[in-house]
Length: 165
Length: 337
Image 1: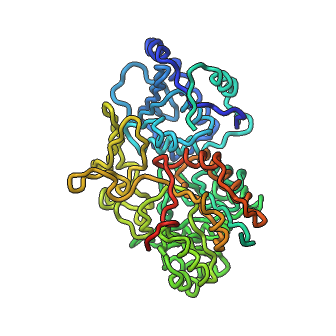
Image 2: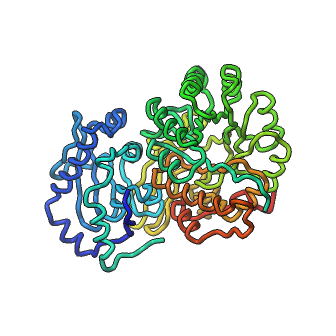
Image 3: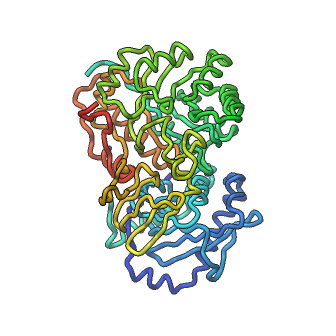
């Protein structure tokens, strides 16, 4: 998919401190738009979508302080604003791990074994989400994740990033 | 180095993108399963329905690759028909072989589809040539997958005494390897690979984050507690740390992956016909990484090359994706028998 290798890096701590004070709705909005596009293109299998109905999800990016809460109901992913209790499923990782995941550079089990990705809550739901994303057959027109290559080239220049073999 | 043909590289596919990744990165053969408990990787959202399987078969077979269908669980009382139907559907779709463990199902497939290739699954637990030859005589199996309990010398002994092709595991997560006979998962949650097609099903698993540690629980039973910097493994009873006589340690087995890179020339030399990669539950990224690494290693053995050496980059790639971040030769090189 991408000719660039996304390195494992951690953003400086101040980024998370600032990020945590910024509004969180843009992350959630960006994420649900992506998911809704995939659902509209019928890239997400119906049986997997059904098991997501009524569940709430939290995707937290540790080193940016960003969080996205969303839910799936009536055929649509939509953001959840404000603290809405314990989510059914929470993913936590640094930005680099998410980038490696979405570009299919790394396997979530690998990241989990290496403690770069954590899953809390309903583990089976986590497996549904993981396997649903793995099974997406990107049509050639959306085969490249917009901006990802530029972004990965940019992060390769970040100071203080660390490589793990 | 002998001039045995290179073993087939048999790679896992839990989804269509994983199947394509295997084919595109050098697998000779892929194996897969239906979205139900007729196979031992029956996890939520994983595996193939008839439509995606037909697409996968076309993708692989049109590129000269074989597709094997794992029907490697045991038909459950009162529901035998479901397993027979899976055989019928697979035969209709045109898979290159079925991987079966249940002797009743082997008999059914042999009688109904005399031309269909049958492989004895690792779950069939045949650890000696008598067992393999019995399945050859009774069901005409083409190949047997050996359980991961034999030394290389023992694998060679089987090969020398059977006309059946022998497949061994080359890479992937290890379990206690009491294949086809393990009920540890049922002890904790009433479900195990042989009954529902899944070890430690995810609905019983909870990862609990606590200050300084992460606890893994299976149906409420504490399996392990990982420090923040410690590598984690799958939440199975066999890989847990338990207190035994005042000491807490991996009482059954450490989380680890099998990796045969260092003994690959010996595996070719003794006449192993196929090398299997574990991991239908893993993502296309894993399939890509492991397939291309083993392909490169096997290709370097072409034409009886006797200057084989394991490249550090191969080892690094496989170590990275290993469970528990460590690898072993398992039973292949153990001194005792």
